[in-house]
Structure formats: structure tokens, C-alpha cells
Image 1 (cartoon, rainbow, N blue to C red):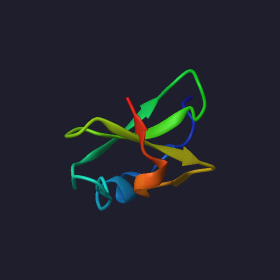
Image 2 (image 1 turned 45 degrees about the vertical axis):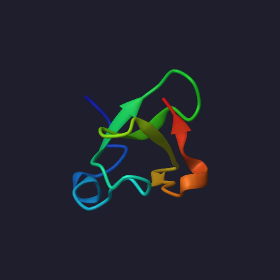
Image 3 (image 1 turned 90 degrees about the vertical axis):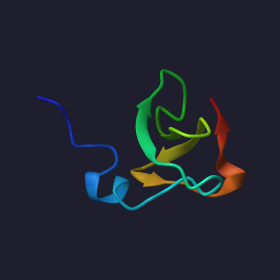
Image 4 (image 1 turned 120 degrees about the vertical axis):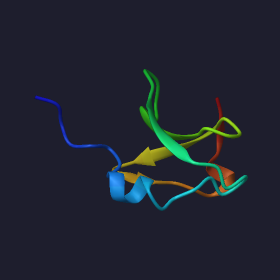
Length: 63
């Protein structure tokens, strides 16, 4: 049985990329941070730490 969603759908429905305002989608990675929100428009990724998305431009990771 799968675990809880790392980022609830209600949160994904309202958050946007702070750099380009694009839609964000959950991505998982083998390296830390393992869960990230990826912008479908610009490709930048933002870490999710302890279930909290870090959506400041300074936290952006280039995919």
C-alpha cells in the first residue's frame, strides 16, 4: 500500500513556481532532497523538506 502523498493535491492546486508562475508537479529523486516540486514550464525544481515545499528562488534547483 502506498504511503501518503508527499504534497497534498490541495496544495498543488494553489502553488506556482515563484520564478515563472508555472504549474508544479511532484518529482522523486534518488539523491537528496528525494521529493521535489518541478515546474513544468521552466524546469526548475524546489525541495520538499519534511512535507513542506521550499518555494523561494534561492532554493531552486536546476533539473
